[in-house]
Structures are given as C-alpha cells and as structure tokens.
Image (cartoon, rainbow, N blue to C red):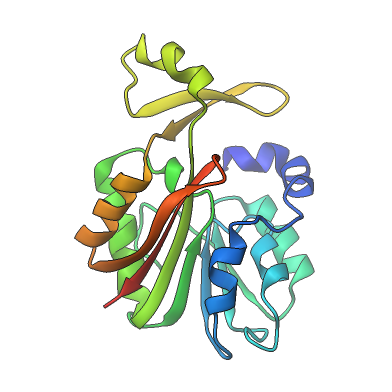
Length: 206
C-alpha cells in the first residue's frame, strides 16, 4: 500500500485546481496528442486538457496510490489508469506518446540511479519530437539545518500534512535537471525556478 492511500481523500480534495505551471506546456499540445501523466494522483491534469486536443482515450495516468487512482477513474471514464512503481519499466512500448508529464513526482526518486532510469524510460516511450515536462519541489530552506546537521545533503526529511508525518524528498535544482535531461538524450528547451516554489523543465526528444 502506498502511504498516499492512508490520506487519499484529503489529498485529492487539496488537488482540484490547475497549477500555474500547467500554462507552460498546455499551449504546446497539439490536436490528437497522446499524454502520459506520471504520478497522476486524482488526474487533476486531465481536467486541464481540452478534449478537442486530447480526446478521451488519449490520456494515460500512472500512480502508486490505488485510492487516488479510484478517484481518477471515477471522474474520467474513457481514459486509462494504471498502478505503477516508477522504479520499474513503464508498461508501454517505445515511441508511443507525444507528451510525458510528471508533476511533483521526480522529488520522490531518492537516488541518482532511480532518476536516471526514470528519465530513460520517459525518453523511450516518447515519439521523436515528443516532449517531457516535469516539476520538482524547491525544498523549503527552513528545513535546511535540521537535515544538514544530520548529514542529509540530498535526501531531506520534511514533515507532511496535518499530522506532520516525516517524508523524504530528493533535493534537486534546475541546473541539475538540465544536466540529467541532457544525459538522458533530451534537448532542454526550458529550465527554471517557477514562481519561487517549483523547478520546472521542458525537454524534447531529438
């Protein structure tokens, strides 16, 4: 069971509105594109994808929480949802999608090897000329010393939710994201800190 299953309903209720980050890539989506949403949660992204561009059946959502996938399926009949652990190969053939999107999922990959594998899989399932858009959390500086003093330079433990349950996140910057994407074979079109809270990166499969 995913830790998200324990508070899936509350988590889903707080994930109803589109993030401003969506505006970076939504205008680039073309009619008929197939979109793979990694870490889809309750499929909030699907609600921002106009059906005249991404018709039902062209959206595929993967997540590790069965409960969040239940909410996603209930709201989006006609689309496709799968349980998946991102440390394993994606359940799709190569050259399948015009878009792979990962919103607030990459910081849960806690080792360089997991990050490398994840990006390699994103590259594999994208069609030539397809795009990867991902965001990762800029970890709050107020947690800097509580982690550094315990030798946690990259994997920070940060309290989450009302219960302040400790969770581990991988610290990464826009500069690191650019390097990782380029090593995975992507052309980086955009990489920056977006409104001070999330790093974003847009890459294209050459």
